[in-house]
Image 1 (cartoon, one colour):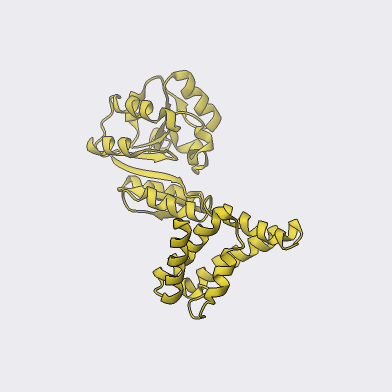
Image 2 (cartoon, rainbow, N blue to C red):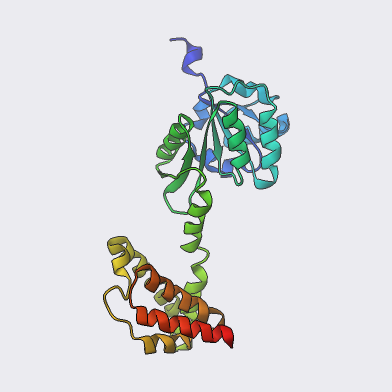
Amino acid sequence: MSRESVFRPEYGLIGAGAVNASLIGRIPGKARALGPVAASSYRVASRIANTLRAGNAVRTVDELDSVRVILFHAPPDQMASLTELLGSADIRWTGKSLIICDCEDSGPATLRFRARGASVALLRGSGIPGRVVVEGTSPALTHASGFARGMRMKAIQIGPGCEDAFDAAVMLGSGALTPLIDHATTLFRKCGVRDSDAVKMASAIFEQTARDYAHSGKQSWAWHKREPNSERIISQLGAVDSRIKALLAELILLGLEALEKHPELASELREWLGRREGS
C-alpha cells in the first residue's frame, strides 16, 4: 500500500461562521482525516482550518471533488449563500455524501444535492445531554452516526421532515417548562419558604415527576388511579397568577382527556374555563 493511499483524507469541508464551535469541531480524528477546507474566500478557509487545527485551505470549492464525504456548516444568515457556492462548484455529486452539521433551515440544501445524486444527512445537537440528532440517507447517514459514536454520543435517528416535531418536544421539556418551574418557586416563596429552599423544592418536584414518568410512563400521572378532588383543584387554580390560571387548567384538562380519566372533573374545568373567557 502506498503512502499516498494511507494518508488520503476521508472528507472535506465547506464552512462559514464558527465552524469549530459546531459538532464538526468535535469530530474524532479530524486532524488526520480532514482534507480540503473551502469557504467564501481563501482567507476564510485558512481561518477555519487554523481554528480546527485540521485540514488544508483550498482556493476553490471545486477541490472538494477529491473527497467522497463533504461536511457543511453555516450560520442561518449565510446558509443560502454557502449552499449556492457549493451548488455552483464543479463537483461530481453521484456517489458522494454530504453531511450538514448544526444548520438551521437545511431543507433547500438537502433537496438540491439529493437531486444531484448525493446522499445527504443532517447531524446536529439535540438539546438532550449525550445525544445528537441524525436524519438522512445512507451512506451519509452511516457516516453521521459514526461521528456520533466517535464523540461518545448516542445518535437519535429521526424520520424525514420531523425536525420541527422533535424540536417542539425538546422545547416542551426545556424553554417552555422553565417558566412553570419558576412560577412554582414563586408560589413556595409566597408561602414563606426561603428563596434557596423554594428553588430546590420546585426543581425537585419536576425532577421527581420526570423520573417517575421514565419508570412508569402515563401510569405515573398523579391522578391515574387516585380520584382528584375537584373542589381543591378549582381552589388551587385561584391561588396562581392570573397569567397562568388558564394554562394550568388547560394542562390538567389535557391530562384528563389524553388518559380518558375523570370526566366529571374535565367537565367542571371546561365550565370554569368557559366562565373565565366569558368574563
